[in-house]
Amino acid sequence: MEITRETLISEIVENCPEAMPAFQAIGMHCMGCAMASGETLEQACAAHGVDPDEFLSALVEYLNTL
Image 1 (cartoon, rainbow, N blue to C red):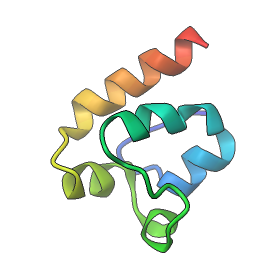
Image 2 (cartoon, helix red, strand yellow):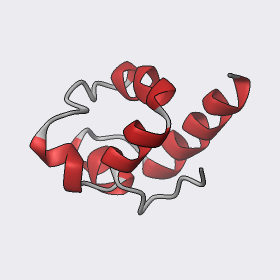
Image 3 (cartoon, rainbow, N blue to C red):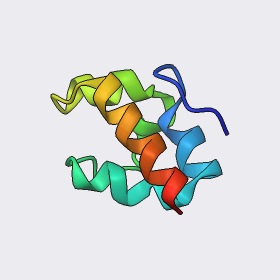
């Protein structure tokens, strides 16, 4: 799955559940909440004070190690 800044958190969790620890590591613990279902990766990062480009790069790198 290609993940971009515009990818919905719900799509990432549905297609790559193994990505959840990367989100949890930066304080995103409500992966199943109502906000996550319609929130993009970029929006979630903004809400948690995380640079979306840095997180996206780290997330892709993490997923590639699995």
